Length: 556
Figure 1 (cartoon, helix red, strand yellow):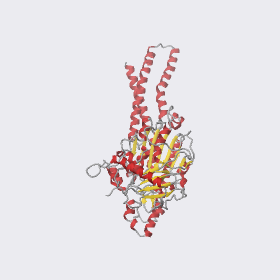
Figure 2: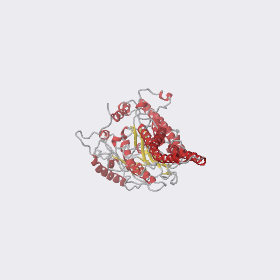
Figure 3: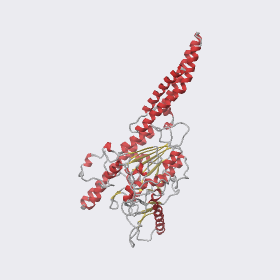
C-alpha cells in the first residue's frame, strides 16, 4: 500500500508538471481565460495519467523485491526496469509531441487535426464598409489590395453580391440567420429607426444562428471582431464558444485595429487546431474615421488637421461649406479611405499566410466579404446607412472552396449574403433544414437571386430589390404624389446615374418589391418598441456607449 501511495504521488506530480508545461506552452496573453483553462486541463490530465500508471509500476516493483538475485534475472530486471521507465514517460512524451504547437505529430497531421474528422474548417473574414470597386479584382487599379487579389486567384469571385442592409447591425443579423432583418429582430415597424437601433435592437431568439448549428455539430466556434454594434448583449455571441469584441483603447484608437484582430485570431488558432472550427474575423477598417496608422506623413500634411473624417464633421460643417472647400474635403476622404483599405489588406494577407503555413488553408472554406459598402459622395452623401445605392449594397464576395469542391472562377449572376450561412452548413455536412435560404451557386449561370435589402439607420425607411437586370429603390413612407421609386438598369447604368423611376420600366418588379416590403413590415410588427419612452433600453456596457459616442452614433 505504501509503495502504491509513493508511486501514485510521484507519478501524479510528474504528470501534473508535464501537464502544466504543455498548458504553458500554449499560453497566450491575448486569450488569458482560455490559456488558464488549458493549463488546468493539462495538470488534471497529467495527474490522471500518473494515477493510472502508478498501480502498474507499483506492482512490478513489488514483484522485483520478491524475486531472486541471480545474475540472469538481474539482467532481466534491469532491462524490465528500463522498459518500465520508458513506458512510464512515453504517454507524457507522446502527449507533448501531439499537443505542443511544433510537436512531431501536429507537424505530421495536416492542419494539426486529430485523425478521424476530415470536415473542413470555415473561416469568415468580413471587412467593414469595404466597397467592391476598391478591390483590385473588381476594378480598382491603384494596387490597394494585393493580398486579397492573390486570394481571389484561388477563389470563386462573385461579381454581383449584395448586402441585406446598408449598414452593419441588420446586415450581420441576416448573414448569420439567412433571413431579412425584419424576420431576425433587427428591423421594427417604425418609420424612423435610428434611436431604436441604438438603444433596443438585438438579434431575436427565434431564428437559428449558423454558429449555433455548427457548434452543435461538433465545430469549435470563435469570433475575433471589433465593432460596438456587434456586441454580445445584442445577440452576436450566440453559438460562439469564444467571443472577443473589444475596443482599441490600449492601442490609442476607437476600435481594435487590423493588426490586433489578426494577432488575436492567430493566437486562438494556435490553441484550436485539433477540431474543425468556425472562425469569424471582422476588421473595422475602412470604416470612418479613416485614420490608417500607415498613412504616409507627407499625405497627412496636405490637409489641415481639423479636417477630421468623422461623419459629424461632414454633416455638421462640410455639407454647408463653399464648393472649393467641400471638393477638397471630399477628395481627402476618398484618399484616406483608400489608405484604410490598403491597411486592412495587409493584415488579411498576414492571416492567410499563416493559415497556409499551418497547413489549414487548402482544406478550409475561406470567405472574404463585407457587410456593406461606403458612400464617398457618389450620390452626394457620405458614409453609409441612409441610402440603397450601388456603392453601399454592392460588396466583394470571394470564396475559396475546400479541396474537392469544384467551382467556377467567376459567378456573374446576382447573389445575396443571406446565402452564406447555408453555404457554411453545406460544406460542414450539417443539415440546412433548420435554416431558410439556399447555398451559394458554384457554377456560372446556376440559380441567381433577387436580393431584398432593408433596414435604414438614418432617415425614413427604404427598401431595395436587386436583380440581374435592375435595381429598384422604394420609399413606402413618401407623401402621396411623390416619386416613390428609383429604377436603374444594371446592365447599362451600373453607377446609377439615370433614374427610370418616372417611366413604366420594371412594373412587375415594382409590384413585387411593394409586396415584399409590406410582408416585411408585417413581420417587423413583432419587434415593436416597448417601454415608457417609446422603446425599451437594452443594457449597453459603458465600453459600448463610449465607442458608439466616439464613432459619432451617440451625442455627448
